[in-house]
Image 1 (spheres, rainbow, N blue to C red):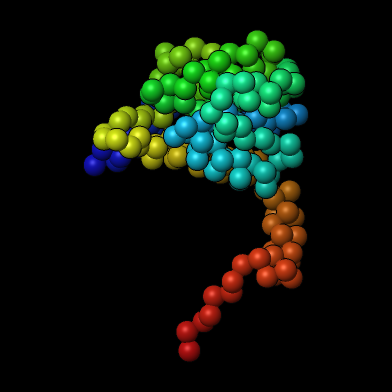
Image 2 (image 1 turned 90 degrees about the horizontal axis):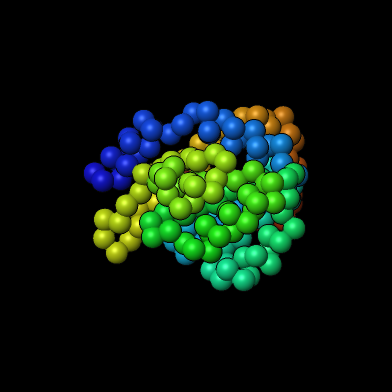
Amino acid sequence: QSDMEKLRQTGETIDRADFTAAVDAILNARRVFILGVRSAAPLANFLGYYLNYMLSNVQAVTTSGAGEMFERIVGVNSGDAVIAISFPRYSTATVKGARYCRSTGATVIGLTDTKLSPLGEHSDHVLVAKSDMVSLVDSLVAPLSVINALIVAIAARRERELANTFNALERIWDQYDVYEKQVEPV
């Protein structure tokens, strides 16, 4: 019930202009960095996995240490887009990474629970997804739904290129037995 409520709240409160601006920034970027550590690391990896099908030069940075994060983003600049993901309790490494990236002129897209969060304060565009600790485990259902919406929006804008990519991948996957074929029932 709590997850369904967070999805409803996210759908009602997400800023459509920020969402569209985020899609534009990602599509127009020379490079895309995705910052997400600790419980946000799976979200960053999921987004990176799908963006790599659609764009070249996408890098998910999921290391927890601020030092290693800065080593991975040191060359970020105004031609780049950075998607930073953090929810309460906000990761210091992600917030500092977003602040640094913004100081270089990169466009920072924050995926967080409020525009007033430490990450929201250092983002050019904030995608708000409701999330809270209902127990020991963070609920990431609403943030994942926003990530899915980003993936779908970018895919829709790159439809022709994606069709070519997936046609080539299907041939490669088939030729090299990447996936098991489902046996049809008799």
